Length: 486
Ligand code: FAD
Ligand code: MLT
Ligand code: ZN
Image (cartoon, helix red, strand yellow):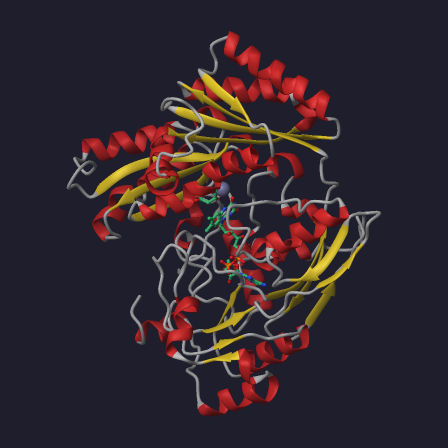
């Protein structure tokens, strides 16, 4: 992909003219138009510092009508657009490939309504996830999703990536919790489907098409989401284990013994804790005495503290007695709960500090989950590519055991074709062979779009292309991403 000529081969979008800027000035307030080179930097670079665009224009509409006028103009004039939320995406989907216009949703951050009986929250797409959760906390409710990027990511970005996160095991996916969406189509049409109904069987469920469509079909401007009651009693335990078989055994038992109060079951390996210790904890707050091959964070959320305490203690004692776990702690207060979660939530940041990190976000049957890490490690050892002064420094495994979702991270000194070729397509073939998905939750963006065929059949990809053609015939929405190039 080269800047300039490839643009015309892949997408016939045109470049910005003074007339375009004049139009946007007539529609948006002056502070909503960003052209300054320094200010453009953050919008052009992704969280991983891996993907870098060349956009000369960022637009920050303040209302659905402004989004509509912006998109209609772009569509009429063949100007390519990248919708952007909190820019925490991990597959290069949120930044331009060339000089596409960035439409940032950061000026749309109002809560529109909340129903304290049903728990239905309706808000602008640019609301930050953590802000929404803090608001709901005051009402006795909780957002049905939580992730390490909560302080920056937008609910519109979460919906557009169909983010999974740390409590999917308890509250399910956004395909279930999103009740309705307001979406602006590329031609400016406002699709108003901000329903707060739990049950609605009238016609095709169009909102599902936009959940996880990564800004390729339109811009999500409003979200209606069902929030569950916030649990009065929350417990968090951290345990150290010596094998992934034991991680599975602990998970299986948690479903039996913690059942309805289980709200998270997250694992990570020794390489992950080592990076967290090196880059974030600085050795100070290490909760377990020694290093273990595996760690599991278990969270329970219920309504009766005594009941949950008793259940969790009994469960952990059973694991200890049967030699399934080697060590463990239970958080004694809110600060300790936060400290344990900080270890888990700090892993992505710690990995990114290890250098250039290749991220693979794959789902597969739990029994083979960790084999992917071991096979990758062995492959790189065989190729003499890992270790001091080699291409790669470490292979890290962590993720959402309850969802069969592994985060395989491979840390290198720098991004290079040589490094990429050692991992890909090997990891995608491995995933397909084990009946897995090449993206469990991060999506496709520009990192995985050409690997979609490992997880979806030709006829499914063909139908996806037809939807895209129907809704975005000029291909202005987030071009070069999501669907395969060919
Ligand atoms: P962006 O990064 O801005 O955009 C992501 C994609 O959505 C892009 O394709 C963009 O064009 C599109 N988009 C954004 N907003 C809109 C909109 N309003 N309308 C249409 N399209 C839009 N993901 C998980 O699934 N689970 C995790 O546990 C998780 N943890 C993370 C932890 C960290 C530290 C980080 C950095 C990322 C994590 N992510 C996780 C990845 C990421 O998908 C989420 O952070 C989040 O859902 C992205 O939201 P965002 O607002 O930052 O979107
Ligand atoms: C996580 O579970 O921490 C996120 O999906 C981010 C990541 O994979 O690094
Ligand atoms: Zn994750």
